[in-house]
Image 1 (cartoon, one colour):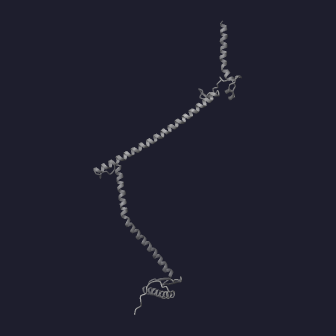
Image 2 (tube, one colour):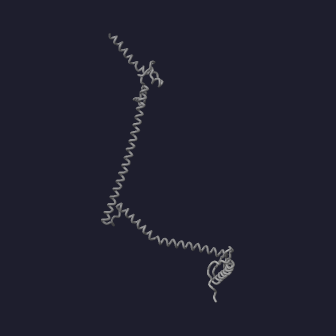
Length: 246
């Protein structure tokens, strides 16, 4: 009578589970040893119990087997990576070819827009190209006119601003002139030599014969009186000459 088939699931009974672990562990390590001897293979088995206790078997040094395993694992990962990259490249190749053809087509259209490589175009294609170029020229002209109008508006605004500044300066000059005349001082007069001189107004003199302007400038009023001296002397000489003639 054969052994009954055991259902593969976790054994709930702790004692039964421990007994089964011990039996199966011994059988597994025995099979590993037999495999290493019969087939001349390097075998390493590591087992951890439910309590965390380790059990191991190695046909040779465990470190050597693990190092060999890690080296082969990394090599396998590199091989898988290369295979995946190659597969992705093959999958994306049609997309890349489509993009390259699209770029070449656009470059050809650009050269044709510049009037090159027109030999392969038919009459209808040439008409279509001419229409596109005319529309492009009109668009460029519209933009150019818009830019010129914007520059003209800026120039007009700048001119108006300059006129307002000049008007303000002119009003300030007029105010200064009015203040100078009210104080009896004229605005500077430029002589033939290029230097400016101040002309005093001697009409507003006080009882002592000194003008307000002369007092402000720290000058004597004799300057104005000296201008009248030659006229008086001339009149005196004229009267003396008339008396001699009589």
